[in-house]
Image (cartoon, rainbow, N blue to C red; front, top):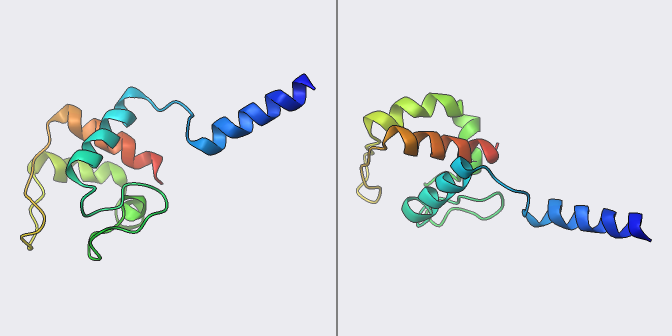
Length: 104
């Protein structure tokens, strides 16, 4: 009975997303939620709210995540007015990259 209960508890933890994320991953997720989620999907299943905004879970298919650090440091500027220009501090870059890697 105890083994079955333990198996159920582990299964619930693994499937509920309750597995502990690192502090950097949590900060990166919070940044993405605050600054990116109004257009981009920042999770594993929902579509982006803006059709032309790629979901974050697909970014690694377009770019190696590590290569985005330079773009984040220099600032991301786009050709459309809907996306604000922004630059991230080194700690924010690390946090956001840590979060993006969880979506690969």
